[in-house]
Amino acid sequence: MKHLLLSLAIAAALPAQALAQEQALARIAAQPAVKQALAYIEQSEPATQKAMLAINAIPAPTFAEAARARDYEQRMKAAGLADVHIDEAGNVLGTHRGSGKGPTVVLAAHLDTVYPASTDLTVREKDGRLYAPGIADNGRSLAAMLAVAQALHDARIQTEGDVLFVANVGEEGLGDLKGVKHLFKQRKDIKAFVGLEPALGVDGDPVTYMGAGSRRFKVTLHGPGGHSYEGFGLPSAIHAAGRVIAHIDDVRVPAQPKVTFNVGVVQGGQSVNSIAAETSLLIDIRSADAALLARVEQQIKDAIQRGVSETNQRWNSQAISAEVTLIGDRPAGQMPTDAVIVKTALAAAKVLGRPALLDAAHSTDANLPMSLGIPAITMSGGGASGGYHAEKLEWWSARNAYTGPQNAMLTILGLVGVRGLDAPLAR
Image (cartoon, rainbow, N blue to C red; front, side):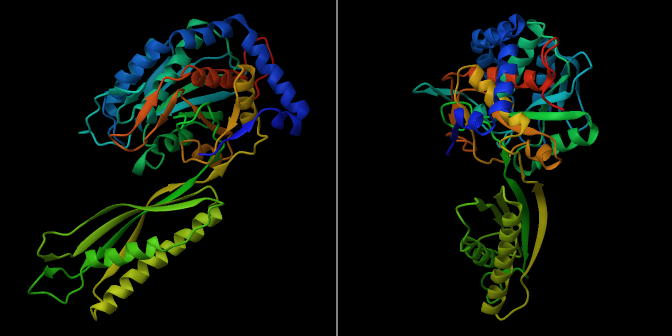
């Protein structure tokens, strides 16, 4: 993963605006209550890690996050948030109330993981890393969000706008951003969105300002079925799937703008001596470039039809057919690098004495607000991590872990405004 180190480069491009923004965040960071909150986040890092392990020990596969949500609801209440509740979609919400004279800004982290409920979530430690499914994505971010909420409460920081804390469902897999889609249908007052995700295995706390869109399909191949010996000569849905996958694999895509495709799940067949009557494939296509995403989608669909036609031709039949169903649609989105929310996050890092990093495109909850024209970014929950979505390989390291939630908190305070200082940066 390549990152762009931004320090004097941003200030050189927009000197007056960047300097004013940095000065505003420096004033906020210098306030006694904010200094207390920043110190709390650093000093309470061991407690944050303890919360991370406890949260991650509760299975939360997509569409089955309820147990973790109930636990997190209690943790939000204990952190001093107001109006804590679980909404109709299963999201957990709580509010740090402001004066009512500023914008509502969301700080969010998703509850769900890619792992099924039966997954062994036991933590093992090796070479300074903690290994466990979901520990980085997104157990750490959930714990980091609680640390921010507790810091704001304990330091009694008076904000102008409300900070809406959201632990949302349905970010992973076929969840299709269920939680944030529901949130933005219900709430029309949200002026900015900051999501927390892993730091993607690198030093520093990069800011993601580009949302890689994705289109996901279930392809069901239908055939006549039959006995492998008695019915030999009838076309097999599994054989057709092989041709389809081979043609998909032959699709060529550019390196830049980046676009990817993947056949992630193949299911079908009845027995070793049955000609398969049905086979299904799950396909994921991603890019931050909407036009390129659409073009590659059409190439994938053409490859599917080519595989079907060749299978029918091979067996002198018309019995194989394909049904293509859209099962996931994450809109692509992008914030300008000079957007207020992006500059605020970069200024927060600089004020705290850290590198200001922009990340490459990723597919996160921030895609949805970006697509709606609402300022949105994704930030790090803290620490380093890697091995995502691989049960035995996912890891998290505590290296400078407290810096992520500190950066996120200062960014939020700049956006929402601190009473008696500058006006909120979010509009």
